[in-house]
Length: 105
Image (cartoon, rainbow, N blue to C red; front, side, top):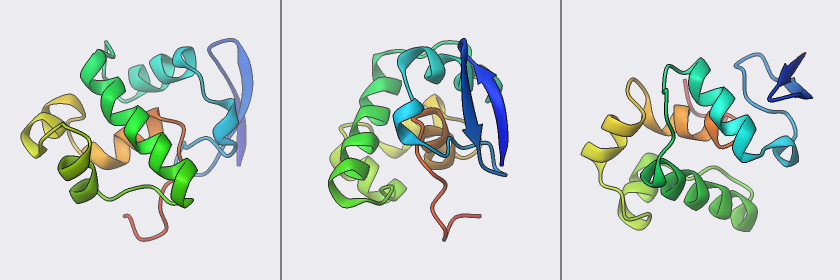
């Protein structure tokens, strides 16, 4: 684990760059993490996915799969890849301040 200043606050990150404490997340942290993932602007669709994922995590304790995201969030698979290119579920989880699920590569 490493400690890093993101959006003016000290946060702990795991080896993959995900927040260790989901409560450290904020809109400002999301914007900073998005920039690290080469996403220059977070729009309403990004937030729709992120908010869905955070709510699912809060309810179930696990990060939803891309299948669940695309079936239940209102954002389809093509949009997911457009919003979060190069690994949409992983990037959305990271930007959303959620841990990397153990089964993901």
